[in-house]
Every structure is written in C-alpha cells, then in structure tokens.
Amino acid sequence: MPAEATLLDNDLQPRLQALQARLAQDPIVATLPPPPQVAILLEIAGSRFIVAWNDTAISVTTPVGPCDHWDFGFTVPEAAWKEFTRTDPGPLNNTAQAMVAQFGEAIIAGDKVKWAQYCAHLERILFCLKPVRDRGVAPQLPRKSAITATYLTLDYGGREYRIFYEESGQGIPMVCLHTAGSDSRQYKYMLEDPELQADFRMIAFDMPWHGRSMPPRGWRSERYELSIQFYVGIIREFVKALGLDKPVLIGCSMGGAVTLVMAGLHGEEYRAICSLEGCLAGNPKAPSRRAIGTRHMEVDHSFFLSTWVAGLMSPRSPQDLQDDVLWEYGQSGPGVYNGDAAMPPSLEAVGKTLGKTRCPLYVFSGDYDYSATPEMSRLAADQLGGEFIPMINKGHFPMAEDPVGFKEDLMPVLARIKQLGS
Image (cartoon, rainbow, N blue to C red; front, top):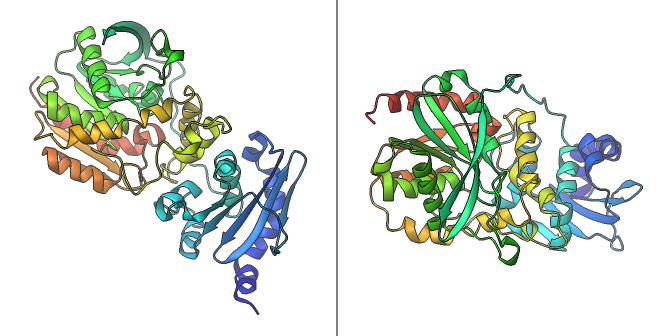
C-alpha cells in the first residue's frame, strides 16, 4: 500500500470523513463571507486533499488527481501536525500562521493573494480536523465600570492630535500603551481590577490613528507610517499634558518596544518601566508584519489580521478573551496595522545606540510570541540592564488574553515598584 494511503487511513481518514459536515456546522465558518469560488489544497503529513467552497456548498476531495484544480496550497509537516492536534499545541504549531512563522512561506503554494483572502477559511479547516477544545473560563468584568474616559488635544510636530484616554484607580500614575493596530481596550481587565485600583492611577490612551483617537486633519492625503521618534514624542507630550509626576510606563508589543527606548533615552522621567513583548528590532525570521494581507485592495485586512493575531496567542488563554483581541484588531482603520509595522527600521536604528536604562526596567515575554520572541526580549533586557521575566504558556497579549495569569507575573513586580521612591 502506498505511504500516502497508509497515513490517510491511519490518521486523517476518519477526520476527513467528518470534515465536510463539521465545516458546514462550524459557527465561525458561518460568520465568514462565503467564497464565490475557491479551492484549497492541503498536504498534511504526506496526505493530500482539496477543500472547495462556493457560495452554496463545501466539498472535500480525496485523493487528489492530476486534473484537480486548486487556487492555493498549504503544507503541514508531520511533526507540526502531531503537535497541532494536541489539546494545547506548543508555540509555532498552534495555527496556520504560526506554522508559516516556523517554516516560512515555502509551505504556501499557488496564489498568495488567494491565501491572504482565505486564510481564515484555511484556519477553520485545520481546526475542524482536531477535537473540539474547551473554551476555558474568562473572568467577569463588573456590571458597572469604574473606568472614566475623556479626550485631550495635543500639539505635536505642528499638528493637533485629539487623544482619547480612559483611567481608573488612585495613587501611583501608570500609563498603559497598546499594541500595533489596536487600542486601550486591551487594558480593560487591569483598569477594572480593584486591587490595582487601590495603589495605581491607571491611564490607557489610544495612539493617533487608533481606536477612538482620530488621525490628524488631512489624513486622507497621506499614508500613515509610524516611527519610533513620533511614538516617543506623543507619549512624552501626553504625560506632560496630564501633569503626571514620574509615572510607571507599561506597554505591549510596539508599546513594549517604545518603552525600551524610553528606558534608555528618558528613563529618569519614570518611576519604573514594564515592557511586555518588547524588543529592539523586527524579527527577521518571522513573516513580515507588512504582509500582503495587511494592506491590499483585494484583501479584507480585518479577516487576515484575525488569523495573524490568533497565532500569537496561547491556546491556554480563555477563548472568549482571544476572541475579544480579534474583535479589536478587526476594527482598526485600513492600513493602520501596516503603518505601525513601518516602525522597526527606526526602532532598530535607535536601539543600537541605547545604553543602560535610567530607571528600573522589567521585560516580560510569553513563549507563544513569534513576533517579539523571548530570545529577542532577553537580549533587549541584557543590553539595557533590565530584568527579564519569562512568562510560560503566555502569548503576545498577556494583559488582554489572559489577565488572570498575567497578574501572577505582574504583581510581584508592582510590589517592588511601590517600594521605590518617586
């Protein structure tokens, strides 16, 4: 018997027999726009099959013949497949996008635009080939929020920026910076935490072009591209406008990167700095954050980003909180995530010049993060003289996707920060 048939019979055959029905009944597939016509070739552990969609039906074809048509293909190596099918697959094996980060774009064949258009459908094919996962338990937010919110206008670089921010708590000021393509809602569980509210005045703001902060006037005639210099300048102007005296600064992803720069350039302005998933350069081994799916007239960037972001999260995070992260990313303006991804060159240029931190610095990193890997975060901590804090079984958005688990890592650090002089 051919090797392909053996693998198919022993591993995939029972799952493939149920795949068409599972896809037809999958509640997430039901929310995706039905493709007018697309055929996806999958090669999993040596077995090949085609899943075809049109606006009325889904079909699964195996074996694949020389005359069969497909638009793009995706290969899952055997070792990755074995890991993916576990309840909690390890880093770089938890989604199709994570596998691309591990093996490179060589595992994608055919039309790359079609891949970007329909990678959300591909993800559901893979997830419908594995057992249904428990969704986990998400913590409850209070029925009546303690968060207050308003706007302020900053003058920077000869332009006005109307900035939205929200805050809660009292005591030591803490400024919270969101990730690329998202907004301050990522900090809602921290801002609603009574224990944190007792000691910290937590303030989270939306960067210009993000969330509820508007772009500057005239934005339609320019292409948004973020630089580290602009980011540093906006943060300093925001802190100045609110009259904050040596706040704690905490940021994640691009917010984590800028906090590292702030520690090296202006650390004396802060009581302490916490960098979450921060590094001082882009990861050359990971797919480009300026990938075709983040700014292309034929690709809905919100669907593409949902697959990209999902691969960065830990499968152990409650699914409802992972879904919240995807929702927030789906609401970013066209090209904003792509524009945020323009920051690494200016970040790397500044990063090379940085000496030791000018305030206590704590660098946190989750092992599921393939955009700013733990190794990259550790290197940044070593360069700046900060403390590296590994977060096991955590993803790229710890404060949003797993606030309960993240609090276990954060509270010992905050206890030390409370003991610092202002």
